Length: 219
Ligand code: E4P
Image (cartoon, rainbow, N blue to C red; front, side, top):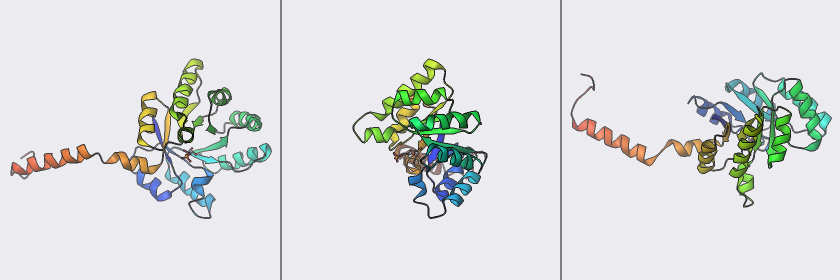
């Protein structure tokens, strides 16, 4: 499983990149809106800091402008993936960009058939939004499971990127399903790092070792 960070916060990205477990970053206009008024600089910094793919979302609306902006975004760094929301009128744009070797992450995916169509176009990532389905009392993880089945049924190459991950159990189930990629808010990583049984276990080992009264393990 690839682990992406779902944030535009450079301090948090720096912190988690240093652990070696982060494969990429996903941003969106909402996340960028929390990081000051120079989004271009924020994005350039992120692309430099991250060894893997960085998803950057288009904010234009008209298909021609989306195409133009996607090309501009793709040109800012080699590790950029252009994020485009699913829409009927963007399908030709996405098809053209894929032919031109632009890596695409189709975002705001809420159905198997949306995912099927963009898989046929050969996009790099498909992002089903788990939490936003859960918000309206529908099991978002079921969609991820169905997309993995669809991918297997037809041998599609596009990777399923579980997005809108809001809690540790989302991540847990995405892992059991075999989801290709998960994008995590940094606070979820923080949450699983400290397990009370691990902390207790370390304390016990420390105390038992000290009770032996030895300075070095291998003396
Ligand atoms: C990432 O690609 C998505 O934009 C993000 O995970 C959405 O998460 P949210 O539904 O919590 O805003």
